[in-house]
Length: 340
Image 1: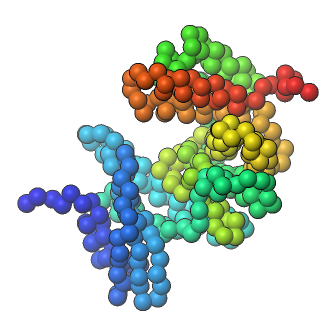
Image 2: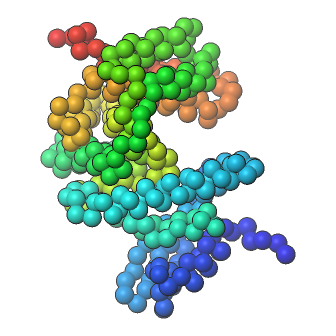
């Protein structure tokens, strides 16, 4: 007998059989609203009507990234990591002003699936795309993003150390992906030399590791009508440096400013507010912060290059080289070298 090609049929049936979930509440109905297919997951948005209330939710089924037992085991680990990170943060911030959290509804390891309640609001990326001037509301939202990052790190506590050598090896791997296609001759060596100079400014070769979202960006941050910020999608959650998430959002705000120089002042104000929300004493010239901006720039261009392998379109190669130039400019110079 052929198995259904729809992974959600078995998941929804299992949920309906569980009275501990909204899906299994007597008298409830489930309406399919939309399905989104990604490389590594399938997501179904549903509306659940129970006798007591109506809510929207997302049913997410993870896909192994390749064939074989190891790939399936890795997908299982990703599922547990995402659900546990979501649940832990939800429990921790119930009464934290200005910060929301996704409510976990269920996890079904046997189906490699999890369910979360939909969060009301709009992605920060959409809000910023329409913003034309600085407002108190936008500044407060940016500050809360910084506060969210600090709060998330505190929930999980310390988790070992990050070796600078590992960061360098990762950066070198990403640089090799664009060497010869995006980077000019000597570009990889220049980027590594810049990394080494920044690493030399750090206080120790091993850095404290903290929980990180690892994919925090304007489109993963939901803002409701009251300005509360909620972060989605903990699939990549792991440990890393304390500035990893914060610098990633900062980097993307810098890209938005580069695309529209007329709004450079707006994005600069929001960047400063975000850093102050994390730590009023933090400045972007901090060597670890600059090091993470360099890493994000390399990874950003490498991901763009992977969309067309090999990159043979001259216009696309020009675009990538231009983007790499912009990314380099987003890493602040050493304080003593900055223009006065």
